[in-house]
Length: 231
Image (spheres, rainbow, N blue to C red):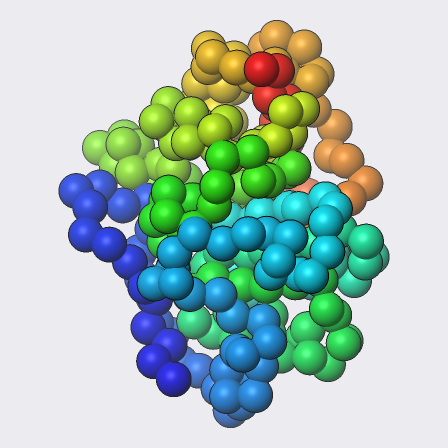
């Protein structure tokens, strides 16, 4: 199959496509597991209950990287259904390979741009929790406009969340955390679960990544922000 990310042309994108070198295991995972775990942007709107053959809690994660924490969450919460979006083919291959090895059934993945998938594949009020962990910080000031957390994105997420649904973000860049806090505290239709202007403690369901553990040893901060849809 063609394992290049699916995307639509837009003026500003929040990611850089990095095809990377696929391992034999990752390529084999596509060949053997895509039919069970893969979802395609080109197929358009999905019914999240139909995808998994059941109703229940649906969690969407944007930019899962190599997917260690996504696999861990799916394995530890079999009654919850997870959908991940990533533009890095080796990461998607690794997640599919891990899901096959661990016989995880409550997980599906997109190899595509998150904004495109949110706009074209998810109906309003179809997600219980959207997770955005350690997105590209675009730390140079001239590139800040490429950060995914912008007012337009926030309102798209709001539309896709079910009543009472949660937007959970985490970053290890203080400036980005401050921007997230300001953007969401000012956003219509959300409340900060920790209180206005406050960061949240890491909830038990979000595993510590290897990257995060290494950062903690070096004294780097990590900020979690959890917002609930209130209308």
